[in-house]
Image 1: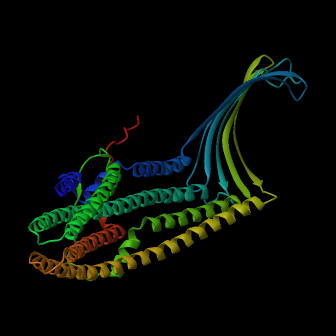
Image 2: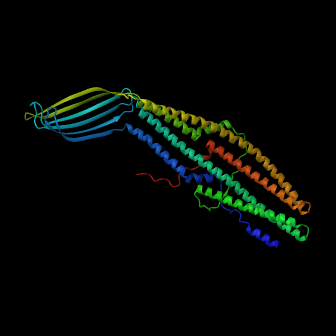
Image 3: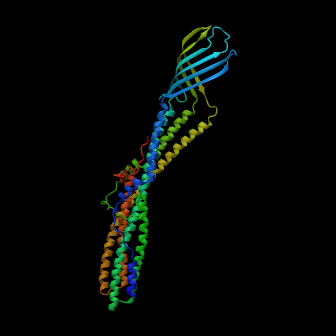
Length: 480
């Protein structure tokens, strides 16, 4: 009966991790970057932001206008008049804030009668004009255009920073999932090794029981150890499968695709220059770049709203030519005359509460962006200091864990020799074996945690993105 139980336990042990390709963190990150939807969306947002500069620059382009119409009306003298007119023009705003325009118009009038014989009827008036508008108050420095360019360029920086934030969030997600899966995989391998040792111990105890030099309690202890290891291995296998599928989703691989995580060995530990690392991190941190750009956007909004709150006071110069032609007493007549003029236009809002509220909103937006910048800067400095301190602590812990592993190995070897000669109990041997397994896992855990912290430090410095290709696998087709 005892052999049947042993056979059942052995056949219940699931197969270990399938030997498959090994993937490092950088390889997993590269595949995740290639297929991540949030990065692709952030890239499209960046393309859209770049078009804003073109939109603002188009404010200085020429604009064409035109109108035409016919009407029947009563003239100043009370005579019915048929009128037809058409006009076309071109105008544009200059970078200085002034604007220029040219236009040409034609008006034809045909009255039923004329009260004065010297007035042409029908008549035709052709006008050609050029005008120059000089703003003296609102719009004098073309704040709408100049600050629009500033805001558009800052908007590009915001979109670029948002892309960097999405990139960092993806790296953090991949790092957490990868290193957690790596430790689970290490525990799974350790569990398989423990099952192999438990099987050898049980076979040894069974032989001793048959020889009468071991008691039945030794067999039960060995069998319980094997069953515990098998149960642990099954739980770890389920956890590993779940974590592997999560990472396969990030890499756009088949859900059941098999691979094994490979944690790259850390470089020889050295003293960290925290001040230099902080300077590197501050120079490339996307959160700081985003809030700095938002400060510039708020300042440009302040300039625009200050300008829009001013009174409108424009000086307009015009020059042109008028040609009046028609029939006077049955005889054709034409008269050309150069014309010129200047006029002032003024407009003021009697209630400026709305403009003042918009200006105060812009000031608050700038204060909010500055406060967020300061908060992000403080958080970044503390994060760099925290990761640096954790690396120093883990390096020391890794050394101690390695020394403990060696000591537990020697202790287990000594207990194994005594157990073979009957001078150590099976319970004592199982306890020492568990101690050794815990020491091995402690080394694995500290090594993985060290790799994880170094990855975090590289992310803060931006070094993690070296040699990473950000081109999406399915690039959008060019628009025609």
